[in-house]
Image 1 (tube, helix red, strand yellow):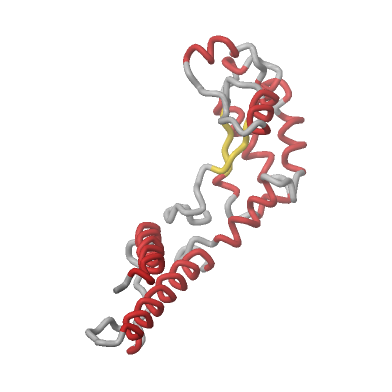
Image 2 (image 1 turned 120 degrees about the horizontal axis):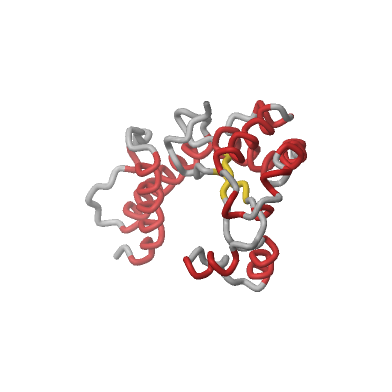
Length: 196
C-alpha cells in the first residue's frame, strides 16, 4: 500500500543517514502532529505522514549544509573558498607561489621536498588577498608522477586519471615538479573541518 511513496521513503532515509553521519550529535526538529505515523484506514493519512517526514529530513539536511560552522558544514563558505583558490577568484597567491618556489619546481618530481613546498604554499596564501579565507588551512599540495598534460588529456576523453602504480612512477619520474597539484584536504562533508 506504500508503493507510491517508496521513493520518498528511500530518499528521506538517505537524507537522515547523511545528516546523522555528518553531525552525530545533532537533533531533528520536532515533528508536527500531522507528521506522526499512526494507524489509519485512509491511505491519504499515510501519504501525508510520509510527505511530512520527507520534508522534515530534507529541511534538516539542507539546514546542516547551509549553517555556518561549527553547527553546520558551511557549504556557502566552502564554495566561496573554492572560488578563491580553485577558480582563482583571488589568484595572486599562485603568482607568489610560482615566484618563491622556482627552484623547487625546476627539480625532478622525485627530488622535491614536499614539506618545503607546503611551507611556501602556506606563506604565499597568508601574504595574498586570500589570506583571510576561513578555510585557507585546508589547502595543501601534493606531488604526482603523471604530467598535467596527460591528466587533462585523459579527463577530456572521460577516462580516469593515471594511476600511481610503482611501474608508472618509474616510467614518469622524469616529469618535472610542475605537476604540482593544489587541492583542498578537507571534504565539504567533513564535520570536523571547522575554520581555524
